[in-house]
Image (tube, rainbow, N blue to C red):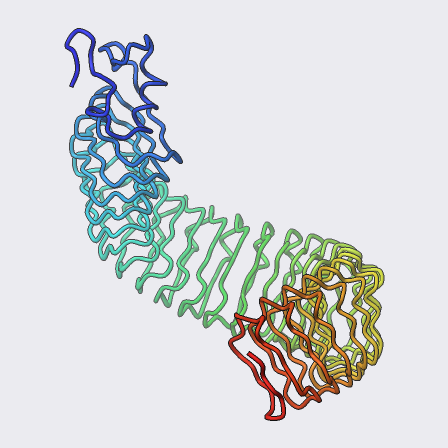
Length: 541
């Protein structure tokens, strides 16, 4: 153990773990004599082993004056802190600990034991406990009736079925989402400001006594009613995927973010929420939406609704707009200079002018009646999808940042992508395109140009190509020798006579049926799991 005069020996007997032992020796053996004197032990108030390759904390009990112990993100499996009676902060997050006894830690203030294998936790002897985070554990029961000082409780992702917070009047933050809780009374928690109970089976929720509430997340619960009229400080409200049919937020003047999608709501009045920055009311039966009073709005998601008209001329701060799958026929975005994302697919829109949106990065207008699309002023554009439209011409020479371009089933006949060096994804299938030059697109990973009038295709400069589908074209030759990353190749129904895939070691899926190929050597393709070729093809292994 040690020498009574010298103290505790810093050896493998007292500290079996080499990493822990070296940590003790380096940080606490002040006189470098290989022993921990009483004075040296008394001076140890914090031990921080987080992220270190430590597995065993045997010997931790010697430090009776220890106040802070941090051993998160380690391989520690057992932890005995019964002799650390001065312990105030304990963090053993993301370890393999299965049992944790804190009965002797009377002055413990903060306990972080989330993401562990702990099945039971008794905090009845910790009256000073202020913070308790035990999320993502196997805990089934949690009694906090003796923790009147508790301010922060997070038991998300546990197997807890019941939770009584009636004795925790000081509770400031409560998170009990993804649990088996069916009932929860927070009427005795007047100080509550942050409350999360999403993905539970709670049917009723009364927050009328929580006047200081700033954040409420009850997504994915069974509640059918929600009264937030007494929560004037509410800033964030999430009640998505619930049975709520009515929502009155007229008293919530501080509201900044509101998510009420996938509910039974048919009406929504946000005219009193002047500070609103994010609004999500998608997948509802809402027919009208007036956001003219929400000048600070940055994100608006109203897709999958019955909305026919949408006026966003007063929303100068708008950055994201998702109004797809609606009955909208006209959309004016000329006043939204900060717009970065626009999703208006599956609408009745016939015209779209994005010339006043220089910051636009992502645009999706698939399945619309749009005939013209000018993106010459959108130099920041990285993703463009205009498939299943009436678009005849598409100039992308000014869009050097373009990474993804999808324009299939359009009336486009010519497509020049020589200036789009950053392009990674190109889908131009089911068009009348006759020529396609991809030599200036070295980063191209996915190319689908099937069912076109293309006769030639040079992919020698596309070494990053992973998937290529050029079936149902007039291509006669195809050289894939420089495409070593290729995993999928579909070239069926073409005029190809020869196909050398010896350099395509990564190839997994090959379809070359109904071609003029007579011989095919697949001996260099060990990962090939799907091969479709007609009976005239000779397969050599």
